[in-house]
Length: 253
Image (cartoon, rainbow, N blue to C red; front, side, top):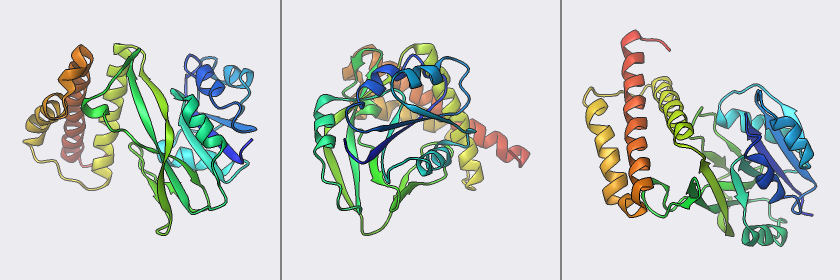
């Protein structure tokens, strides 16, 4: 076992958790699920599959992750989402990884799936997020969405061999709701940051985002799923700038 705490933030993820938890059971003796108000079977499913559970109020992606990470046993944190499965190559890499140097942060290639189809192009191409770090030298910023890992300037960034299998879309309805929520939260975050949204961005930016995803990033090569992803990117961008516009008109959130 490695001195790594696997930390997963959840809400209503009972249908996603079992394969994710099984994929890391041989890596560490601590898998910590931080639940943020589930009303399904997430907590009993987590415990049944070997995880310990804490419950916290949702405070946005970055801050909630930091709060959970502080309660972990080990300083090395493998941060996963409930729908992210560690493949065999990545598991082997993690099991044999030298962790004596704490000034390392690791990215992992993520393969994104639309239902059961692997997406190879468009917005989901070349996805390589930070997922392993030492909490003494790295933490998430407090952005409500699209949080970023902030780490000491002398840390070395490396990429691990292997992949995270990201089962990000289970149904079109779930995907639509997710992108709607992200659009609202991103608009609110822009407002809090004092960003200005020119009137034309509500009309031009969504179509630019669609064309960039579908044409320039070759999303059309993923077939109908590529078209759906580009269309959802357009919708997300429209909602983001419309939310920002509305907040700027009222002057408050």
